[in-house]
Image (cartoon, rainbow, N blue to C red; front, top):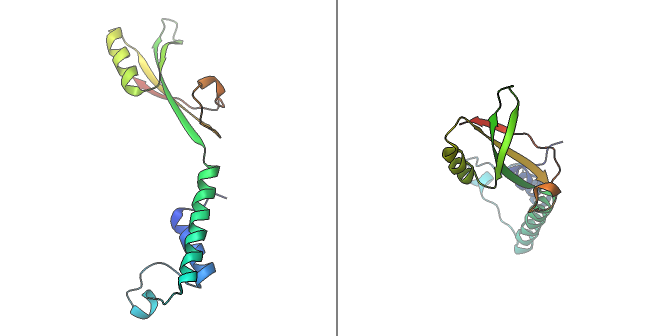
Length: 130
């Protein structure tokens, strides 16, 4: 099951804590305005904070990098160099002064990582001819 969106989380908390059926405006004062005790507001805010904390803790860190390559005479490809930013890869490709391509690689990791070698290698390249 996919994770809840922020609005779905807000709706769930409103149903569970405040017995509200929806957070959508109904353009009716009796349905859009509610009297709440401060402890009810505090409970809802604590639940929203906890939901955000858990969502952030389970998030994966996305790492992207760019490789500049060329297609060889036999149709195979060869990586010439790898860069952390697209801007650096484009500068390098422009200086090559020959046909090449730039691949954008991306990988998810449970922790931040500075080294490409430490990342789970389940990445998929996006290919840009240059």
